[in-house]
Length: 434
Image (tube, rainbow, N blue to C red; front, side, top):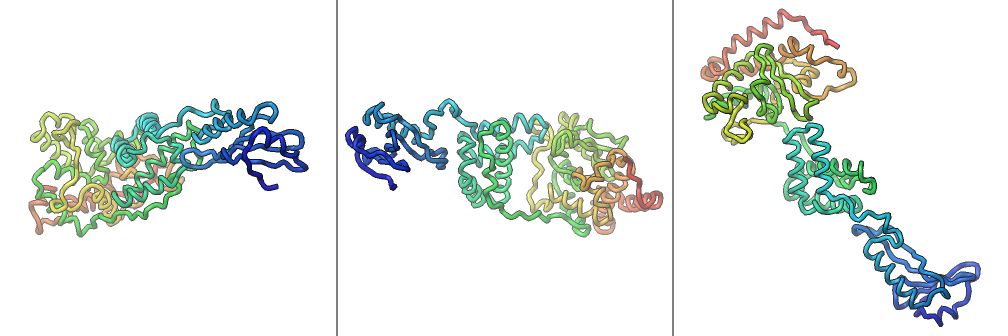
């Protein structure tokens, strides 16, 4: 039977016939959501409303108010108004004690992720700052928003990804969403009431292309002339060492003098990207050692106080070089460009893929790589591979083309002879220690 509608009063309800095999409803025409459910033996006052939370309809709530005869229609109507009001506010009538007064906000989730996860696990300060920029700048207006709302309304995340893409670019938009995804996943471990599906999964990721800005052997000579022409000799050595090592600039800027061991010909990087557990040593070639000595000398001249602690000192709060970027018309390649160049040069001189991973402190591919003992390779094998890469850089200048640059770097002929001697003295392959 279809629902009936009329003004509910004590008299009108008393006249309603009992139901047959199936109950029926009579809805009040004055108060939407208030009705009486008529059965075979009793007539029950009911209230029904849509339960919404964070702008999303979750279900239809139906509440029993009492039986006709035990309460008047006026009393039932008053209780119905209260119940429907609670439903309209997003509260479950009769289940208030089970509902938390508030859910974790994005700000709380971010601060917890920062302190309990990133700092505790020794994440790089640059990585933490990158997350902070995403959370506190790109999601600033969401900081006090319940995280559950984003979980229940993934369309908000989709719209924000589109907005950031348009205003800040596709790479920043993707990066911001990766940060949000990580914070949400971490928060859900201790806040099980959050929707299981991460709202970031709803976005269409922007297509990303690996930046192909590395130099090949034929490009190095022109770049070295640019580098030699720079006014700041300490920054000159920093960029050169970045190319020689293939390491991340953020790690190189924080090299302390006590991390440098010229006797063992190694530099220790205690906290690279990934934290202390990713600490590694960089084997030093002869050109790298000369670069370090020049950097120490220039540091003592330019920043005598800071040079007591740092390999690349500067007049900064931390006492070391902070900003490594240059104007492109002054130096065409720096930072990650040089990291890519190192990888390209290594390939040009025939350094194996595995050795390049070890030299650049990349995660090793394959299961068997986990059995390699890196320290056993540092002293001889990896240093020889480092020497081959450095020699290619030095030899690219050529005495007849630019003697001033060659004099700055050291004799290219000596480097060529040294590499040749190593090749003659060493077997084709070096056993891997396990």
